[in-house]
Amino acid sequence: MADPTRLTAFANSPGFRLDGVVVLVDVEQVESQLDGAVIGPTVRRQIEAADLLLLSKSQLVDASAVLQVRRRLAEMVSATPIVDGADAAGSASFLELGTRRPGGVVDMPPMQLFDPHETTMIPLPSPTTRTELNRILDGLDADVVRAKGIAVDRRGRRLLIQVVGRRRDITELTQAEDQAPTDLVVIAARGPVSRPIPVPLQDRITRS
Image (cartoon, rainbow, N blue to C red; front, side):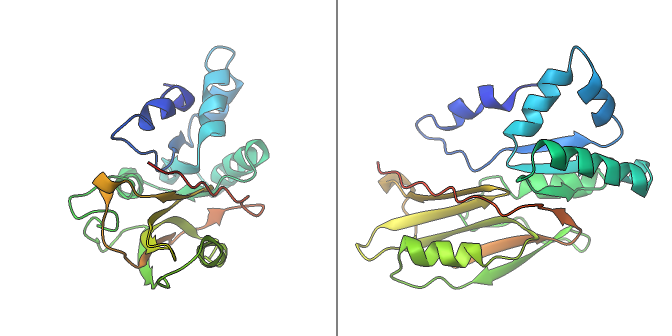
């Protein structure tokens, strides 16, 4: 058990980029852990640091227990999406969406028949502006848990678009990461996603 806030600083070191923080929540144990005098504060910090909460082992408890966990988490972090990963395979497939792949930013793992998510592509205008990109992201459905793509602004700069749960970043690609523009890859959960209130805009532009 670790505190994600101690690790995220390393993800912003040279050669690395933080896409988002995904925290797995054990539905069987999370309530007792939160109530624990020793580990409770650490578990709470984990949950509060997450951009996306992924429920695991939900198939081992009844529906009322899952609903109770969802409600408690929503009370703690009302803006953080909560997705049910169900079993180990489902949880792993969501986590794999965040990995870097040889084909670049929009390269995706091969689709499987029982994936708990589905992928669509949205063409991005070229050239474009941050206002236009934000309008596109604002229009994404509530079940979207991941989106990524590369756009070109009117000054010819390549912009990396990243959405992970509640986190939204638009950053200028460094010369070492430069890639051709792409469509926006949008990944939506097939199951219910708890997203009680609108996600606040978090749009950062960084330059090398």
